[in-house]
Image 1 (tube, rainbow, N blue to C red):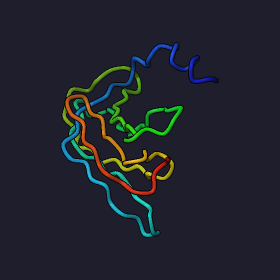
Image 2 (cartoon, one colour):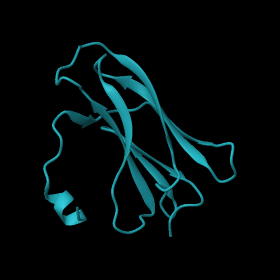
Image 3 (cartoon, helix red, strand yellow):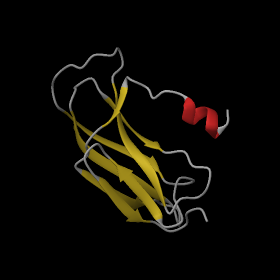
Image 4 (spheres, helix red, strand yellow):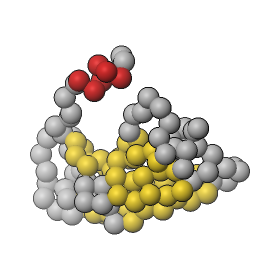
Amino acid sequence: MTMNVIEMTSAAQSSRVINFDKAEVVGGFVNNSFFLVVSGEAPCINMEVSLIPLMYVRCPEYWGIEVVGTLPGGFCLDAVKPFTVTIALTGITGSQGIEVIGANSTKRFDVGGGCS
C-alpha cells in the first residue's frame, strides 16, 4: 500500500489522541538505545493506551509519536485509569529527535542516532 493510498483512507473512529501528564526518554542497556516512557490518566477505565509513531516518506527533524487511546467494544466505562506506556525508539527517531503528541500538548526531545 503506497503512502498516497494510506493518506486517502479515513481515520479510525474507535481511537483518539489523548492527554498525557509526563513523558521522558530513558537510556537502554545497550549503547545508543533509548525508550520513550509516557504516563497520564485515561478518561475510561477500559481504554487501552498505546504510543503510535507517525508515518513519514522522508526523515523528519522530530519524529511524531501519538499517545492514542482505543476503546475495545466501542464504549467508555466512565472512570479515570492511570497509565504508563513505553516504546523503543529504534527506527522511529528523526534527525533531531522525537515529538510526543497528546490531545492538548506536545513535547520534544533531542535524541541522537536518528535517521538522516
